[in-house]
Length: 336
Image (cartoon, rainbow, N blue to C red; front, side, top):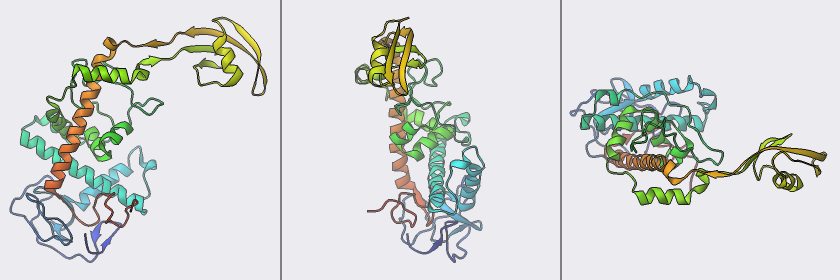
């Protein structure tokens, strides 16, 4: 998009007043349609503000169908983030990373608005489309970086094989890598997005062959290796020790004392106090959990595809509020 703008606020520099009457986010107004965005794209069915357009005296950040998200609304959400428990992890507002955080937040708010519009169009129950919640804490993750499979007793999908992102959704690195950070954040925070995801999930349950194939390809996720309790180390598994010490530990029988064994700092005397044999959960015990996890991931991918299509059809972003990865914006960190 063309034209200089203030990178601190996203407002076009020297922008003047524009036609009034553009509805704020949450309001609708089919008569408030503008065309001719300099350097922008005319989107069918969307309000198209000219560069520097104002809504009720406020700068426009994005237009979503016939709804407007103002820069002031973005700033309010950003203040909530910077006043929250993860504030120390956020980039400084005066940096390129800080400005890109603001751009990213615009994408999240756009996605929330699209989900709310779709939920209203589908007539979903009001309790399903409450206002977005604060972003949940990151979910559990194994040391390998893969998310732990949900506990059948606690998972919102339940043992019935439910397919949707449930009320207890959490924001995980695995989810962000699978669908993108915006989709993962919106599904974690927006009841409307989760409700739409449930609708999109219908008929996407994995087949028995898909569930069984996942089990065969990921046996390590359902296998606990042999574990030994060794004095003075405590609980150890193969690969956690090295050299002669590991060899001695795993050659000894339960209750046996072995050593002295040469190791770091000199000789070691080791006592194998207890041995727990390796074990693997049988397919029947994890089948429903795997099915629920695969269905949840399929639903999330379907929601991501739906969101991409709706954004292409119905969204206009004003200068300073582009996607952080847009190479045309001045703070883009990745260029070719």
